[in-house]
Length: 272
Image (cartoon, rainbow, N blue to C red; front, side, top):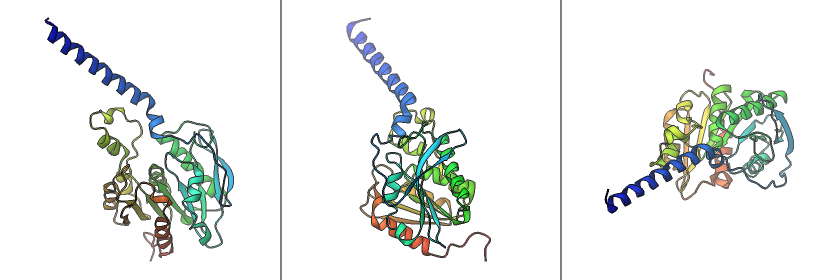
């Protein structure tokens, strides 16, 4: 084998080894990439009480709760992957003064809670939050489930399991596996990715009224995902906000859109 060929072979071996190393890192560390929980824990705010509830796998999770005024519904809010439940307080600061209750749900591994986040783990956490509300006398017909970003995956799953009064999705994705696959086309993400959150498939079978909000300047999750979700269910309303990025949930216009939606008569399937 002459020298140029040996150089080419060594380069190919190096590239193949590096590619394999990347695959191993992504496979073993994907939880850290998908769930970058904040390391600092800020103070509670907004008059929320810090409460706790137990998951089916034995975790005791601390979250935030503020009861609804008489006759008002309660929002079960699932936050994004880079925040914690206090961010849900900020994202509902125009809803609470209107009398709506909020359970700012939390995930295992976030804000000092035990556990390691995963798709199935977040679903267990969501069920525990619903059970907490039930224990407070708040049933499914009085609950509006809200999911922001990766919280949309938990919200869609919980809405499919419980049939809430309504479902609100903010900056959601149609499918996490599709989103990751589009961003890393050179990787076999279909084989690597453990958590998939197939929202669009699940949304088609939800009978609640649905509001979907997305910014057209969202560089993390393109608003085409919201359009796909809206097309999956005829009960869905879609509103796109020009010039707004992935921080839509903290914009006043997003909360105002949610307020208008909550004040509309919600006609449940099968009612007259």
